[in-house]
Image (cartoon, rainbow, N blue to C red; front, top):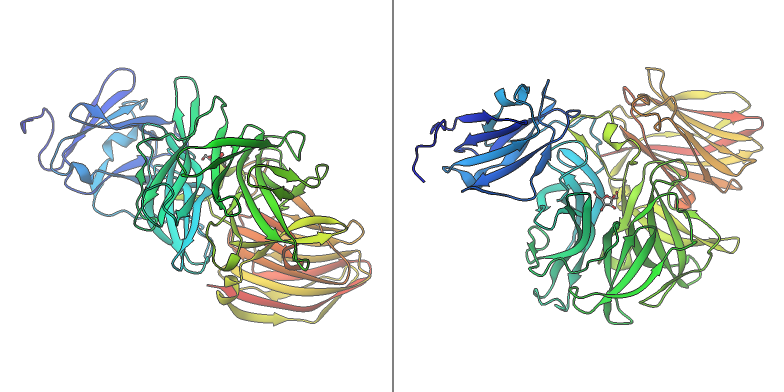
Amino acid sequence: MSGTVPGIADDGGITVRHMSNEQNIIELKPERKYLLLPVQDNAPEGRIFMVQDNAASVPGINIRLARERVDYYVPLDVSDFIGRLLQIDVQAVPASSVCWSVLKCSDEFSMDISPAPVYHHTPPYGWMNDPNGMFYKDGTYHLYYQFNPYGCTWGNMHWGHSTSEDLVHWKHEGTALAPDSWGYIFSGSAVLDKENTAGFGENAVVAVYTSSKPTLWTDCQTQSIACSLDGGKTFDKYEGNPVLTSDLRDFRDPKVFWYAPGGHWVMILAAGQEMQIYSSSDLKSWKFESSFGQSQGAHGGVWECPDLVELEVEGTGERKWVLICNLNPGGPFGGSATQYFVGSFDGKKFINESPTVTKWMDWGKDNYASVTWSNAPDGRCIAIGWMSNWQYQNQLPVRGYRGANTIARELGLYERDGEVYLKSAPVSEMYAARERFSSVGPVKVSGMDWKLDFTLPENGAFEVEMSIRNNGAEKIGIVFCNGSGENVSMYYDIARGQFVMDRTESGNVDFSQDFPAVTVAPAETEGTLSLRIFFDRTSAEVFGNGGEFVMTNLLFPSEPYSGMGFFADRGSFTVTSAEIYVIK
Ligand code: FRU
């Protein structure tokens, strides 16, 4: 093509042509790496396609280009087009929008995200939901995630990638999987193919994910694979994708693991309101084995993001299988939540040993899509969850990003009254990340007498570890508050055998009617009570009695909670010790 394209400046200028029906063409010869696109979070979605030589890239990018105001910019990588003509076909954006006059090119991109957690994993900017494809290799924990690089609301699902040596401090590694002709990249898992069963190479990392293809009417979900020969940084998609199809509408989130006794791979995936189990010898061809779910557990919504892990029941030497089942909606406090089933698995079929009991992994509103690391060292079983809830995630009052993950949790099993339950404790790496701030106690608290004078670290990122002895109190209360009159109160209700968290006065709660909430966990209230409570600017995670109950809730105080206090109802209790730590 000659250099004379009408309206295109050779000096890196950008021109825009507007046509009928809100159709537009942006034209440029990029000289820099990024075209920065202005976004307005609440504008309707338009769609853009990059066009070269009259052919468009698929499947297009859905983007809320700014109509009245610019909330932030997102980068579109145009480096492949440097010195050549790039046309961008923009659909469903009116010519009167402000975006057209503020487009710009840059070699740099960075975004301030706020309020940003200090020690929780977030995307560098943009939207994040489920953790995906986690695996461990050569001292590094890899974490992928559902990522929209073109906005802070859900869409354009890619796999973002982060790594960590200690499960606490995360490094951004860029984008690992981008949408293709089979669709957006939905949730899935990754395995290390140590024996080269797939033929991609020894120790190839194989990602198994859902391709979700927009169709004329809705979308179509199939399973695809991709392999990485550079330890998870970049992936090549398999040419025979998709490797597993179905006529079901909801058919997604494959979790794959090696079943050593049978010498084969197992895939568990969500299919409507049940989980299906498949087997394979090469990760490419899959055989249906069984399904699980009918009349088991909670069914208030779609089943998603399964996992199947084998764990030892504490103190017994006995091993049992746990089927993790994320459910949305239908959680105990509305919206998303994670239930689990304990039982046996023979490589083909899972059998729930207590079909009449519903068990929840976390008793807060904000731990969803929890799944575990593949190939974790020393037989560890480590889970991480998306710290949010589909009820309000698109409205969270934060800027430049949306979505954080929980702290990583070590899973185990314990028995109580003949029933086996899941235990989730903070990973031991959290000890190394903390530094003592102050020690409180012993403090005796009686009647309605409030003890309110304990100062917290200024930046709102801390842990309080405490043990409490009850002397006949009916309520054992702990409150965290700030100078703006906002507070989160937590208490044991002794008579009911419960631990409660109330976030109705915690700060900004008005952005969604589903946000203000009081969450309740069944709790052991006899003997010494131990709690580890983690705050990180926009969240609180409580682990009771070594993780026998867990409660994760988001919080949006207008300033960090600066004080901690205690309250009792009747009788008294003693905080035998409370250590406050800063987490860095
Ligand atoms: C769960 C989920 C998954 C799906 C992904 C899409 O939060 O709905 O089932 O793969 O999110 O982003």
